[in-house]
Image (cartoon, rainbow, N blue to C red):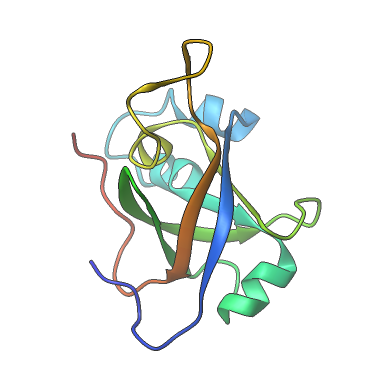
Amino acid sequence: MLGCKGLAELKLTLIVARTTEQELAAFLPEGKPERLEKLAVAYLSKGDLQRLEISPGEHVKISSPAGWVVVKALEDPELPEGLIMIPKGFWASKLTPTELAEGSLLADRGIEVTVEKAEGPVSPPNF
């Protein structure tokens, strides 16, 4: 899976958070399309979506030093520019480092990621 060469890419700061929709979707059976719809998403500001030249619902490739994923981009009008939020779960785990941060906590906030428009489907959950 590759991003679209020649199109805009942004460096953004990743935050991983729990959402009500994510909590409820986690109880759906594996393979249910609704589960993927609720969990394989990233929230961006309107300005960052415009800079990436994508519309809500299109796919983005998010890369970090730990790995990469392809998810559906959604707009969050309350999210400041420069941040990207992904719900806790498989897709967020693929982007976060496995080593512990200072204070023996997992480093799931403040990770610099590269975001670009993606070709192809959402990354399936596989370990």
